[in-house]
Image (cartoon, rainbow over all chains, first blue to last red; front, side, top):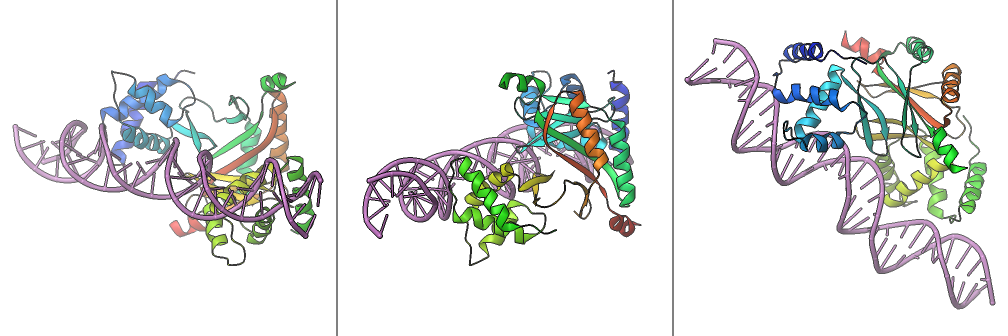
Length: 150
Length: 150
DNA sequence: TATCTTAATGAAAGTCAATCTCAATCAGCT
DNA sequence: AGCTGATTGAGATTGACTTTCATTAAGATA
């Protein structure tokens, strides 16, 4: 999936201006870093990865703060919440999808299902509820782990 | 929704025996307490509530340990994970359902939708994934809060 | 029923993700 | 270039949850 990073950053700059926030190097760097990380991540994992790079140093505090900001902006999402851990995903350029999570090996399988999305919208209408986002996690055992357990 | 508490406790006793665990007063008490609490709860909330009762004292540790046990047994479920908080529900005697969560007032609306369940099963088959449980949270603004904001 | 073995319990300490504090720094307006 | 207020980083703090370990209780056995 190709993401136009420059375009994304321009939109983020506009977003920051709208909120009277400043366009800082750390914030723009974090977008590059996240885009190049290219997989599901936990914040502490990202903190370690970023601090291991000599070219771009961003503190733990700023990473946490920027993650929150990028979430509001819509570039990343909390996709799995399990065992006091939060797994995020950089979602720019990806269609909405949900996740199968193997409780044995931790494998994460993404799936797209329009029908489920539509049914959710219907439910929301029924309850006069305005959805902002949602998270569907299906926990279970993946095929590999089932084979191993036989 | 009527729950046959005695029957539930008998099943729980069998479950404990199967696992070579002991049938203790605290464990049985917790089932009564949860059944009488009758709403979504957080563990700390439960700890406070239980410790405010003079008739049944159960320690924080035991509550946490028993909550985990009852989850494995299937009597309670983690239904909402948000902001480092976990909201549980006593699910005995209730059909499977999912939740709309108002991010403004915290209201939780339960809904049942067979079609969504069936589609999830199809997705799992497609990926040869054996589902154990799932959680669908739809975050948004409820009708009351939208009215207030106008 | 008394004894014995082992699991369960409670209190307190520990863990860990996440947030907060505050002095120093930087963005960006004038 | 100077000014103002937002941002940053380092470390302290919070809060949910877990672990430790000495004491207690379950429940099997005699």
